[in-house]
Amino acid sequence: MKVIHYIWSGNIGGIEKLTIWLAENQLKRSNLSNFILVGTNKGPLFETLKQKNIDYDILGLNSGWGFKLNAWSKLRKHFKSADIIHIHTFNPWVLLAAIFSGKKIVYTLHGNFVYGRKVKLTDKVNQYFIRLVLNRFVDKVTFNSKFTESTAHKKYGLNSVRTQLVYNGVDFTNLILTDNNDIKFFRDRHSNKFIVGTIARFAGVKRIDRLIDAFEIFSKDKNDVLLLLTGDGPLRQSLEQKVKDHNMESKVIFTGFQKNAANWESLMNVCVFPSQNESFGLVAVEALYLGRPVMVFNDGGGLVEITEGISPDDIVDSVEQAAVRMNEYYRHKEQSEQTDIIQKRKTYAMNFSIENMEQQFYNIYQMLLK
Image (cartoon, rainbow, N blue to C red):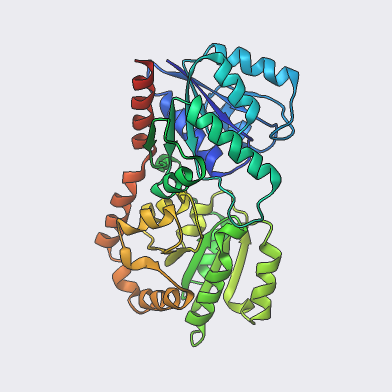
């Protein structure tokens, strides 16, 4: 069995990282080979593909609807050798080539819906095209959460195609903590602090603004607390200005992008993921695996599904309630750090393993090839 995966770029994003984890675990099967097609030559993950001995090719596309004859030739050549074409992100030419190949097509909706920004004409065109293709030409559509499934049915109908929920999986073998100089310095300097934090791309859907608002309420009468914001993105400057405007600079640290974000996640007493309409949330699973409590908002989409299975009380419905919940963890820090509670979080997180995800997709592939 040969599976060809398609992703857009080699950037470090959830879809790209997840696809590489999936492909790596698939290669452990003696009866399965795979290949990754990448739309555009951007990002640092190509070195990772080489290190993991995952075969790949770059189509050299410049934009979603941009057409290149040599890219079309590559698509036709690679798809001809496939048994299963597994598409992880939308591209019209990839979809057309997959349809013309006559091979079985699995399309995973990772939840790249238009949230947190203005809907453009191209978004409407893409939605129409996706709706048409998924309902008429795709053999199986999968969703990474119930939230994604519900949203996709509203947008695309999906009454004429087989569907299945397959939760994202984390490769816990890659979740390795390293005690580098930055981490040692931070830990020594703030060893007496109660740390609230998050790891995210600073974009609209992540709603870092309401985490800052909640922390401001929580920290008003406390000098031994710290907000740790790890990540980068288009809203970083405005978020830094917000912190400055509220005179919170002494209590808030922006670390910028960190290659091994888990190092910083492990320093947090409470991990808060304040996203709105998040499709899943790999970082939340990683935080639980590290033994950290995870707090989310009730409009957090797939994040709610992760949290409700381990700690429903950590699903809050307002900034004010988030501040109250932070205070509860602050007052009962020792209880939250008990070994049995940490192990309970880790055990629960393993329900969302890459091995479980890989097995479900393998079953799907086998079913389609029958």
